[in-house]
Length: 260
Image (cartoon, rainbow, N blue to C red; front, side, top):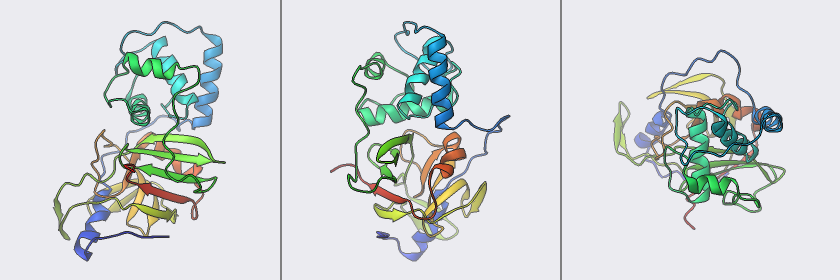
């Protein structure tokens, strides 16, 4: 595993705080996995005809147009949560991931341009491949697009919006520094279930790829912009099952700037 850490010891200690935490939402039932959502979406699509979508879909909207959006996102491996016709935060984060991979402006709405991209007969373009010969099973994180892609058998199995290091100067009891998400070739090392306490808060279901410092982990704050202190934040609903898709230790993790 190649490590490209450039932190001095005080700043290195700060990175652990990159895993900022907000309180976890309560859930009445366990989350559905992407395969379950895709199967439910196919069954729902067969049972109900498609309706003409409104010009713009926004969070808070309900109905068949939203359900059709969720079906299409699920089929393309952009996990939108349950296909229930409600445009909530889970669906919005899947929308962001799709916009990011398609080169669309990231916004809190589904524009006519995005709806056209989703309906392309040939299918929307696939996420940019960062490491073409990186292995049949691998994780790729594109810092420019703020997207994580999980490949299984060299096919896209999951696409998730992420939030990586925001670059903002911050201080803690260990000192001050600018957070950085390291680029390079790594592997998953360990998984810790539930909430894991770190100096600046907590992480949810972290999958570590550098010691117990850098991880891919759930967070309630995964904005459109880079905002972490170094870790790779993923939405909570994805973090609830992500570790079950990734053998640990040993799954390759490739982090690239995405600008080349």
